[in-house]
Image 1 (cartoon, rainbow, N blue to C red):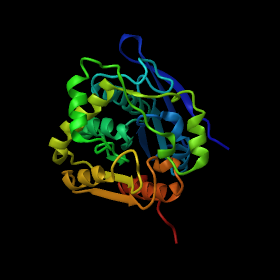
Image 2 (tube, rainbow, N blue to C red; image 1 turned 45 degrees about the horizontal axis):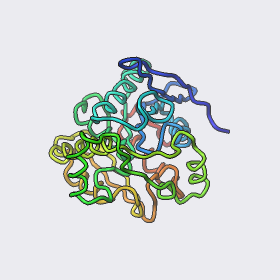
Image 3 (cartoon, rainbow, N blue to C red; image 1 turned 90 degrees about the horizontal axis):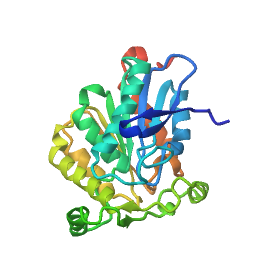
Image 4 (cartoon, rainbow, N blue to C red; image 1 turned 90 degrees about the vertical axis):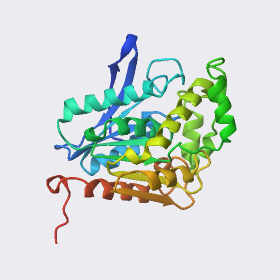
Length: 287
């Protein structure tokens, strides 16, 4: 039986409303995980992951970025990644108000990894750690094309630019069928300005990876056809943290928590989270 999420809207600037789902264990949570999705996704794709984390004693918050899922805003359109970063910040502040000083971990998938990395870079003291899945740092597009996009995005910002295939997200036919039938991502194409904004954010990250010093867990499937595993490897190599872990999953696809074999990825994440909690917040083996 699927655990029912609490659903609500956060008021942002100019009447914009951001949709948020949250899940809580029956007793006091040990820590909090905030989830930021990527493109062609929304918080609804994290029910399974949230349920498993709740079963391990974590409270979970997941948002729909502006213009995506059930949030307001122009569909799929931004001009600066800071717009998404502000949405993530608002959800983290919501979790802070409700959960107090519990350790808070940020989880970002794909383009949500770019957004979350940007937030983490500027707010490291507010986080207990950062989990980056299928990082959209290196994509399957030539550098010269990305340079052209950034150069002309101001002229034709809403020109449809990037359309991803549902079948590239998961090897599970049931997940692909769910995506095919999802009206919230139907016909989704990333506009020129959005692609440029994410690319510019990656330019910044490339220059400052060494400044990221909080604990980092980086996850990527070797058969990801949306983002290159090499980007996660570069992040791991350049991150300044002494506590950094890279996990590559042989044969797995882009959306690891909606792919076949997701259970082993979950086990790695829960083990990593638990090891970074104070002893009083851990589940200790007996016997």
